[in-house]
Image 1 (cartoon, rainbow, N blue to C red):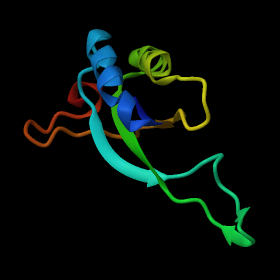
Image 2: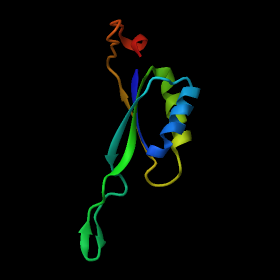
Image 3: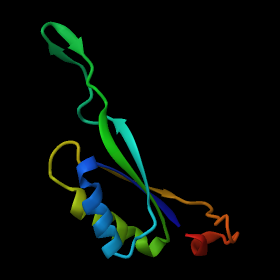
Image 4: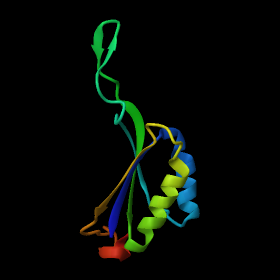
Length: 111
């Protein structure tokens, strides 16, 4: 089991969500977040050092069994990519345990 975390542009959320559903990835968690990546660093504006503002993004958390990781990642990349700085990132981390509270199922069945 893996946890796929994607940080994407807010305007891409609906397109990514629809593409994931079409790829039979239907269980996702969505959060509104802020941050900055390559835009970081100080710049000079009118003689003053300016630190960039935090930029609104959307975070998707998708717990999936190993056989769905590549499908999930490829779907997100295909639909979220614009080719410009700020498209986002995808992180894949091992998921040690998953427990469905209602039934107490564990592991891949709980996802």
